[in-house]
Structures are given as C-alpha cells and as structure tokens.
Image 1 (cartoon, rainbow, N blue to C red):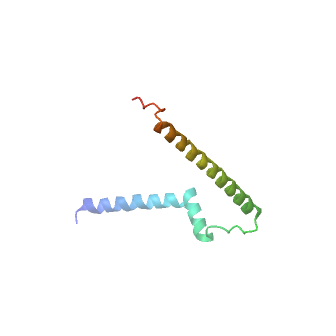
Image 2 (tube, rainbow, N blue to C red):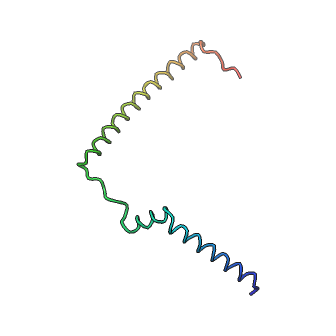
Image 3 (cartoon, rainbow, N blue to C red):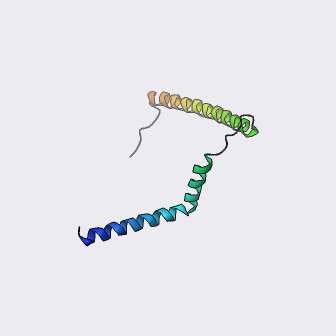
Length: 93
C-alpha cells in the first residue's frame, strides 16, 4: 500500500475524531447526552392550567381563522360578480 494512502487515512481519522470530540464537549453535545440519559422530559399532566390556557387559545385562533375564511369567500364572490358584470378593468402590464 502506498504511504500516501496510509497518511491520508490517518489524517481523515484524526479530523473525524477531532470533530466528534468537539461535538461531545459543545453545548449541542451536552444537550444530546442529557436527552439520551434522561429522555425527552416529563409529560405535562392534563390537569395543568397551562393546558387549559393553550386549549382556549387554540379555540380562539380557530374561530378567528373561520371568520377570516368567511370574509375571504365573501370577497372572492363579490370580485367574481364585479368581473362578470364587466365593471372590473383588465390588469395592465
């Protein structure tokens, strides 16, 4: 085996080891290690008041989205009527 191939293999191994060691001691590596050792964290109990707040916020956002959707449908219908009557000018390019 030529010496260049052996040296190239050693250099690649050293670089790979340096990357892994750098990752292991970085904040990302520590976070990964903590997650592996302790899991994803404790589940939030259903009776937690934060869950109720999030459910209420979600319901409010759904109502607002429904209202916006109705307004968009209305606007599209009006624009279609105006276009059908020929009251809407053509787009100028």
